[in-house]
Image 1 (cartoon, one colour):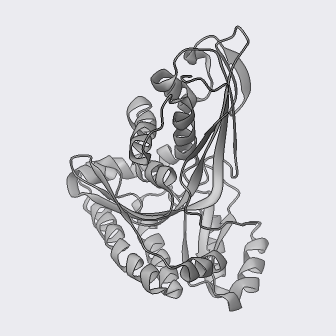
Image 2: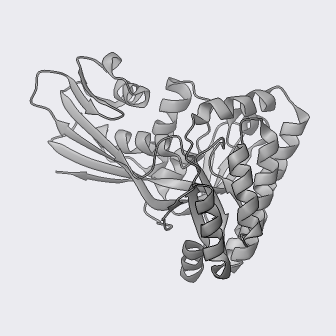
Length: 331
């Protein structure tokens, strides 16, 4: 751990991908270019680091607690790879905590990588540099079949439209959403936990293989998913939150066709009941296969939808949109 500080605290937000998810995967983006529109929320991953006094090189409470004399002894693969790339070798204690379970579709692994890299780096890094370094841990170091959208949304924060060029370059556009529209979105977009977590890499691997092999059905669905970012941006900027819900629903119709593991029978039943109770649309976040179900629910339908989801054993997770990206304090 570089620098003079004995203690640092870093955090990075989780994200909600609203449209275009999956088109950032290299198997698609390197052929056609990808576009994702998403936003950061007030749920975060926080990492605490301290220059250690013990003889053991690394003491860590991440997924579990333990000590190691080298990075190879760490159980957490993201921490192993982050330390290989960004640790100066001096003894360090690490502890992390998150506001939601891992594998729930909100980009928690990316937020962890962003926060850890921010803390381990001995210098301030730009959000773009931080996102590239964090995504390199997963994509290059660990070989996971993921894209960079989570890392960029976590590092930058706010409502953003991300463009993934065929040469691997990433450009970012701010999406202007008025404060009163954000407040309405805070009230009308709700999260319910399906009770199931999963490894996004396993779900995305199927999609990446289909896209990489030129499977036309997968390509066509991803093309349309990418095209949804335009209408969604227009709906956000003009404050049409009902249209946001409809676009989420169309996104989910397309996404369910990307692979057998994208949806779950229980999630499908709960989604149908939510629509019957008055939700205008929604989708499973992230790769799918479990995690959080995002719904657009007009105020008049809120209690009915809440009751329908409770009947499926899917509790609500409170959240609000938050423009803050990665944060770092050194003490």
